[in-house]
Image 1 (spheres, rainbow, N blue to C red):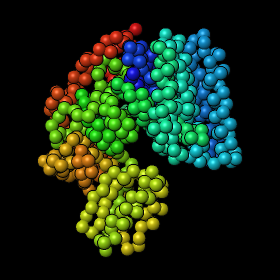
Image 2: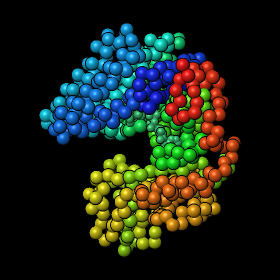
Image 3: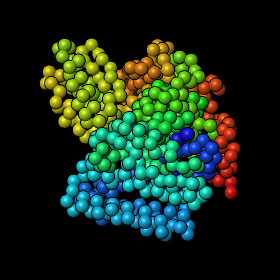
Length: 487
Ligand code: ADP
Ligand code: ASP
Ligand code: MG
C-alpha cells in the first residue's frame, strides 16, 4: 500500500480535484490511501472568521463563512453535477450551519476563542474536503470510502499543536484500512484528530503531512507521497528566490532540518514516523506529475559536506543574554528553553559566547513577558525583524570550508550570529529580514552555480520526464509552473 497526500493548493477548485483523481487512478495498483488537506486557503478563512467573531465583529465573521460556504457549494456542484444537490444538503450545508452556531456563540461573547474551540472550528476544512473528494472520486470512477480522521488519529490534548498517540493510532489504522474491501480507496482528512475523550484536536498548521506519515507508518506503507505545488525539494525557498534546482533525493535528516528551518513543503514532524520503518517519502508536483520529484530516504547521493539546500525562516527575534556570573548561565538558558517549549515557541539558533548566550526565536506576543522572567543579573538585548538562514546537508556543520565560504560570501551583510546544528547537518545564521532575499541570492550563486547532475536537476532542465506513473496520467502542457491540461 502507499499513502498519497494532497495539500490545499492541489485541491483549490473542482478541476484541481479532477487532476488529483487522475493521479490517484494511475496508482490504483499500489492500493493508495488518500489524505487530503482543506481545499485551497480554507483553513486561513476559518481562522479569520473565528478571529473576527472573537473580536465581536459578527458581520465580518459571517461574511467570511458565507464566502467559504459559496466556494464549497460551487466547487461541489462542478464536481458532482447531478448528484451535487443531495450531497450538499447532507454533507455541506449542515457543516456550515454548525460553524455558524460556533461563530455566533463567539461573536456574542457566550464563548471564548480557546485553543480547543479554535481546533473545533479549523477542523471543518478537512471534514468538508475529505467528504467532497471521496464523493468526487466515486463519480469519477474510483471506488472510494470516506474515513473520519477524528476516529483514527488519537492525540494528546495540546490543542492547536497536538501530539499523536502513535501506538493507539497505529492499532486503529491497522484494524481498519486493510479491510475496506478490494479496490476501495480510503480518503481521510489530514491535520485533525481527537483526544481519547473524542474532543477534536489539530496537529498544527501544515499538519496534513504528519497525518500522511502516521498513516504510512501505521499500515507499513511502501511509500508516502506528498503531492504539492512545487516539483520537489528545491535548493532554495521559491518564495524568496525562484531559480532553485530540484534535489533528486535527500536523507531523512536533511529533510527534517530543512523543514525545521522553514521549508514549508514538509511539516517538520513528518519525517520521524517514516524513519523508524525506512519508508521513503516522495515530494511531487500535482500540476506536473510527469516529474519524479524528490525522494526522502535513509541515504542520498552527495558527499559529506555538500550543501543541499538553503532554508530560511522569517519572523524571528534574536535575543542576547549577557551574564555577569557565568556560573548561572546554563540554568538560565535551560529555564528559558523550557519556558519557550511550554509555549510552543521554536528556538532555532543558539550561540554560546564567553559572557553569555544568543539565540533566535520565533516572534511571539508572549516574548516580552517571558523575557521579563529572566533573572535581574542578566542583561537582555533584543533584535527584532530578523531572519534565520540555514545551509543544510549531511556534514555541513562540521565542514569548516563551507562555513568560511558562506561567511566570506556574505561580507557586507549584517550577519549577527552563527552556529552549527546539533546534528551537524546545518550551519545557520541570522540576518536582518530586509537583507534576506539578497543574502539567499548571494549564497545560491556561491553554492549552486554549477551542480552535480547525480544530486540535483538544474532549474533549466526542470521539465525532465522520468516517472512511469506520470506517463499513465492525462497529458499536460508544460512550460509554466502552472501547467494546464492539454484537453
Ligand atoms: P501544500 O498546500 O501542498 O501543503 P505548502 O504551501 O504547505 O503546500 O508547501 C509547499 C510550499 O513550500 C511551496 O509552494 C514553497 O513555496 C514552499 N517551500 C519552502 N521552501 C521550499 C523548498 N526548499 N523546496 C520546495 N518548496 C519550498
Ligand atoms: N489545512 C491545514 C493548514 O492549512 C493543514 C495542512 O494544510 O496541512 O494548515
Ligand atoms: Mg503543507
